[in-house]
Image 1 (tube, rainbow, N blue to C red):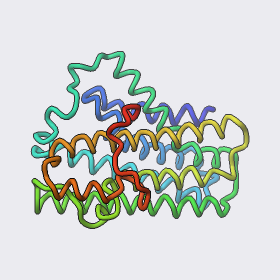
Image 2: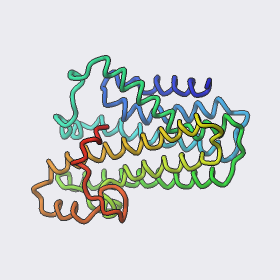
Image 3: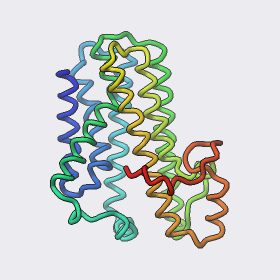
Length: 263
């Protein structure tokens, strides 16, 4: 419990940037919190780390730094802010109480997401096959989302007024969100052999579906925005009709009508 509370405190500190701009609670603050949690795990359990658990913690740090760095860079671009004007609710419409609620609930989710690593370290479990399987899955997810972001940035520089349908975007329309889901699937899978009680299992079960829900919510917002921007383009409509929105080879082409995805 002590380690869990320390990680929660780190997540709260890292994501407090959202009080400046509330969307940062779940964007820049998200990446910063995951990175800081990774650092916290390395510090808290420095005397009992194995190659596997140290690699898991390091991967969280790399994941968080990459995501936060990318989002800071994107947010600093004048063209991005101009394009998103009117798409994101301004801070003026968000009360302090609502901001506190988002801050606390998001920070708790970030700790729950990383809890499989915490439980392995806290219970002094040895590195096993599932740890390495989870590492491989998470690393694959990190490569996927990094590649997708790089491909999208390149295409937007060359053809700023067009949707992206090259590279990984031929496989799914939201490969960066797919990479996120694969990353956290690896983290969850790595802990399947270490949950020592119902509380640990519940924490992990809450964390994993929680971030999957958030990713589908982000996908819905993106689809609505793309339909608004490109809906009159026959090429876009054809691309949308034949390319799954999130999961390869699964014929799910739209989620915008699923209003329960409001994350």
